[in-house]
Amino acid sequence: MIAEIKKYIEITNSIDIILKETPYKLNYIIEKVGIKKPTFFKKLKDKRFSPEELLEIAKIIDPLENQKIEIKESIDKALKDIEEGRVKPHNEIMKEARQRIENRKNADRMDA
Figure 1 (cartoon, rainbow, N blue to C red):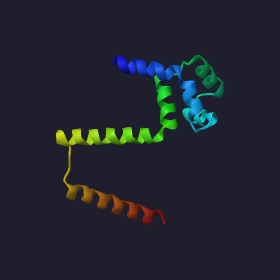
Figure 2: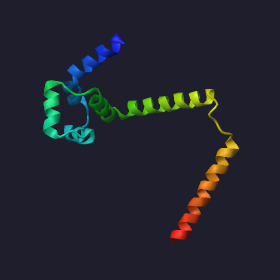
Figure 3: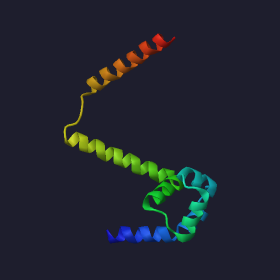
Figure 4: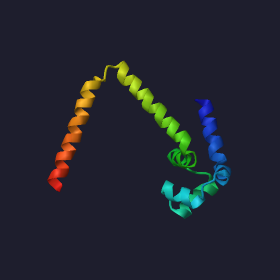
């Protein structure tokens, strides 16, 4: 845990350098994070971003890493579901999918 906290402190202290090195424009990052421009620059100057704000910034400037993490989390959840017996047979899943498709077709016909 100490290593993670030290890494967080390191990132917080060097966020201005990290943002300068990213290929993304600051205005784009500010818009995506959803912080008002003056507030963003004040936080940047004071190096006072919350952990949640830093996470949002990281997701923007490193989208591939974010996707890798999301995929890994999804796989871990699926493995846990399998382990705990929360699974359905393939034929049941296909039957439900076909029913949803049929329901959608019927709804589209009603709208037309």
